Length: 332
Image (cartoon, rainbow, N blue to C red; front, side, top):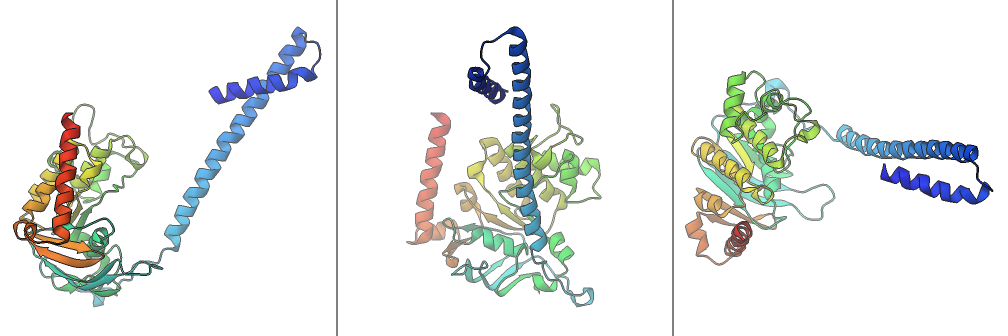
């Protein structure tokens, strides 16, 4: 509205010298024409914004359509895993066009019922490893095995059934809160969905129920609420392997507590791989894998690694310092 009014004033000032002596009829006619012209210009500007957004969306759709499908074996050739240990056997991965591997010759076993923390500096390959475990991409070297079976030999539906993920980017669809949680288990009843939300730290009430619309991309929910919906999906699905990016740097204190509670609920019951950002999480892990430049630099428990020189000691010092800054910011 302010922009349109400014445009009207500009047009009036521009045409006034061309009209000669003003009279009431001429002035009214000019104002009507100017307002009409401003309205047309405003509509054209809005249309241009819509066209730009549509072009951006079409490019995104094009990228999806052009993406190569994940290869899948014929049903008679697939195998089902026996157990939920995850083995990373010489795993390497390179992004197309990248000069170096994002992950190189990674060897580790994530034991069922234990929590493994994945730590390292930015760009060290943590998220790539998480994506490979969930088979969001295929290794370029080595193998990822679940229950002794290469994920490439499993049906895609079996991989999806065995692995749940919580990443920093939470994808919600336009629809209700209940529908977005029920994606994890379409057959779940309302009681199960409600219980999953409660355990994820998002109890119903105060205007929030299963029929609450979340908006396109979940825009009607806060960032913390969207993260808890993602956690509720994991709790409802109850897959044997859970990959969780703690991502607490982007969460408020209440949401971070909900993520910590989800970790507490899952550890000991599931094969849990956590990309850890919090000192408490790192300390409580059964095993820590320290990545640096896509390679496994160190491994062990916190007490063992804390006393050794190396990448973990530097990471730990940075983590302690950042926790201190957060505490001071909260209470200053």
